[in-house]
Amino acid sequence: TRLLGSRGILWLTRHLPGTVPEEARFLANLALQMLKDHQVLIYSPRLKKVSRGRFPPILYDDQDELFRDAGRRIGKRKPTVAIFGHGGASFPILASR
Image (tube, rainbow, N blue to C red):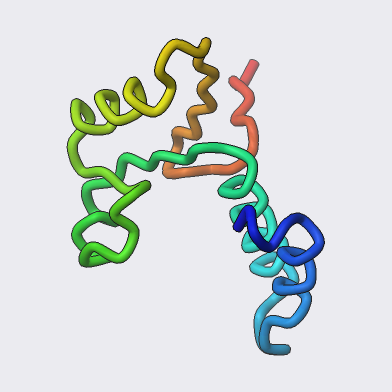
């Protein structure tokens, strides 16, 4: 994704088949931009099983392994983390008042 750059990613998502809904185009663009700009690691035992090894660099079914790999990737830099709970919602879940 870094080779494509932001404009290449936008071009790619605009040229998805016409049957792809706008929301899916937006999410594809968001996901590719995220992968371009950040090191993304995903913990999902179910997704790891059903993907059958198609995403080995980012998908984990073992939390200890994920954190070891994250520590190795970060090295001595100060880490920043974004956690999306609630089944992977990609927007802030505000606590009800």
